[in-house]
Image (tube, helix red, strand yellow):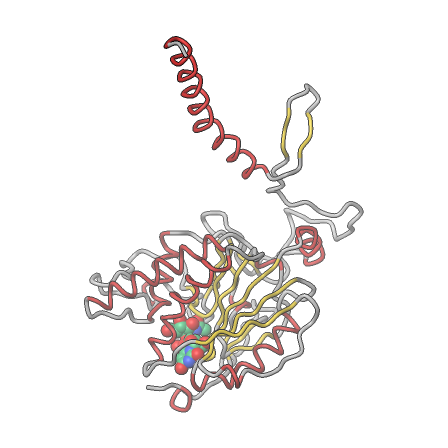
Length: 343
Ligand code: UD2
């Protein structure tokens, strides 16, 4: 082969290589971003519909919405324009129709370690009655006593997955270590068909609908105990030496450790950050005032939730219902800490 031909061939190989390296990711990125539906616009350009917007079923009927009339006793949007979900601010028929079309799967995690196993039956039975009814649901139960997990009849499309975890001598450790386990679970789940995940306390029961209105990228629940208080009274971690520290004059709301969720990538980042900060604090001999709940609150101060659920989504049975709470959807049961905690 003469030298000129070799040079031309080499040149072609380099040009093709450059095109592959630079153009392929651009096309792949566009495809990933745009999804699969494809069409041609009027002027002949190829376009792809991203379907990121909400699509309803043609012919669906529901009450006319208004931007003039609605609830006036509560605030239903945050200063960063995330919805705050209260009864009367959403239309279940409309939202269910949108997410049925998307054929979503929702996962829930719940930990029942040591004596907390006694709460699991009610949690699971009431979840069957109220949590994403009519949708594909996977409930992941983490326990040190897999044989004690109650047999609860689940509807078609709903599944219970039991995972073994270690017990601990300290309840604080059990509660806080959930973040690490949730982080690992999500890393596994990414291969599965799960779209959203909610992480919930076991010592609670569902009393009313918890459904598609709660879906969002990063979802947090306002704690029922502090939503009328000035933020100086919130039980944030106040020692600057902790990675959960929230300074005076900072913080939006006090969020619950007992319920949060969102899409997998967002909840993964939240769990990973809270787990790492909890561990790094521990190495320096510090444990935040409310363990992972304090780290969660620090995280959600810096990383604003895209949807906020009102205290309807985590009430406490010992509290009388306030008038603005028209529906209690999920509520912590009354428990005797001396009876159930290991320390
Ligand atoms: C609050 C939070 C909780 C957590 C904790 C601080 C709410 C309603 N609860 O509740 O989520 O942030 O403060 O650490 O916001 N668990 C066991 N076995 C045990 C102890 C705990 O399985 O021995 C699990 C169980 O799923 C329980 C959860 O950890 O629901 C939280 O523990 P908790 O309910 O005792 O925490 P509590 O009431 O202080």
